[in-house]
Image (cartoon, rainbow over all chains, first blue to last red; front, side, top):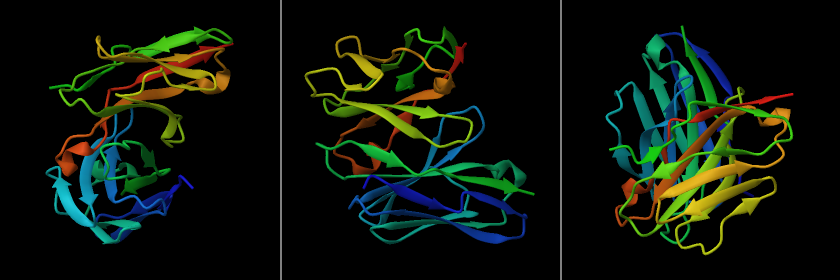
Length: 114
Length: 118
């Protein structure tokens, strides 16, 4: 099983709403990532979790709040977003092993902030 | 500094012909992995092929092959017998195997939009 599952696939939210994006993998990967991708641009790294601990926050605004409740799950909590936060949000996972550098992506959540 | 460079913003190819998408990379880490992903308009990031820095042979997956030239730091994707369904954005990416756990995230190039013409 090389699947990373993201829910929901599409999300429309108002600027005062609170919502969460979810990501799940059962490959035993101990590193999980959130990326943000604007149209016609490459994905940009937001957060990295390693062994359920936040190891990288790429200066992401606090209206985005990641959470890794266990080794299989990764959440991204959204609050008071702006229209410019509308984008495709991708989750990925990988082993924490220098000898195995494969990484796998979920299908993404397309977020629209109105 | 840019770690992954894709110099072709857009490419056209005739159906059934082969096409090469260029990718160069920059790293001082001896352990790294190179990836190619296809992203159609639906947004899904579809994994195509992977090459590890210590792999002796060039990776192949069906119609996809990776022309890995380590000394030149290039990892070009070759798609043989192009199909209309190959029209999409293609991203080259790298993952370094450095000691710093947090730095082992994937870094992407700017992408190449491929259009296959009938």
